[in-house]
Image (cartoon, rainbow, N blue to C red; front, side):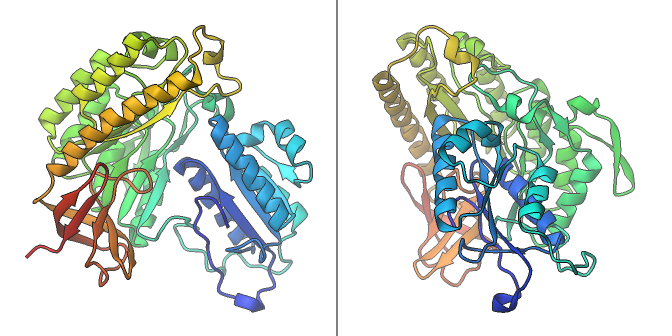
Length: 454
């Protein structure tokens, strides 16, 4: 089945009599966690999970609606599910625009929006009723729930929604304002994941550094002790689990400074995923981003003084309305000074409902593409220098895949799916989930090769 999701197999094989559900999960890791939550509830209700269209009584498509290309992919996935199965329920971010979905695919059974877990589960129950005889207390549901990631890493969503009003983004209109999970709830899930053998937890949200703001950092309890629902305390608690902890979607607020010593001491991974978006103060202001470019550079330098190993990944937008040639050069200069480790770049996409669409100075598509090419060329050279500096060093890596061609792993500086990999040609004896030391012996623009140390 297409999409980013891994399939979950049932134990009953051909003898199964329970209704079955297939899932296509598109978009970001936050959507993947939503899919896991839905499947966990359905499995608890007695449904089996099908790895393909043919074996499913009904198919769920969890859509992404962030940019136009994501919408197009979602509509294509809905069409494929209808063609292959015929009984389709649509959920997720694009579900807020039911009219657009039904215009192209009028035969979908139901459409629900993001975070509407009960609504989508109720629609499944309506169109494929659960088994009459089912005892959720004897069902073999793992304590950590159904996961669509490999067994050795998992995403931990700590909040929903966002309080920012970035002019290029429509996520707040789809997912609402920030709603943080109490820290006791978050840590309970993290502890269950660690107990199940997860070696890496990836913390996700729309704004990780704002965690707990809506709750006024209220005290909660974990392990019998009071703990504040706040980013610093969350990181300290996660560090106590003794596994890799990686932070995503962090905004460069001043209090993020408090986390860097924990990275330097090895408590959590020396890795920050921060969506800077641009290097021009005027463009950032037009985007209504919460930090200025000069402050960002100063903060990066300060962080690296405390934790020299710190790896920073980021995303940027080129071709934002009104972006001048000089402002694009400012962005390139920001890249050269910041020397970020991993970077993604998008050309500006006029998503329906984004306020930036009304700004003057729309950039021609050809110019956007030229700037994207120049941006990626600049960053590729920086990335190559970072990786070449690791040749000859010993690095701890987490093995993700093993085949007859060797193993694919990641360093502490790389997240799954979005960052680089380490190829280990003689790694066939390894197993996914193993943490091992390797010697880096080669590099290209984005990936490394390694061998076992002598």
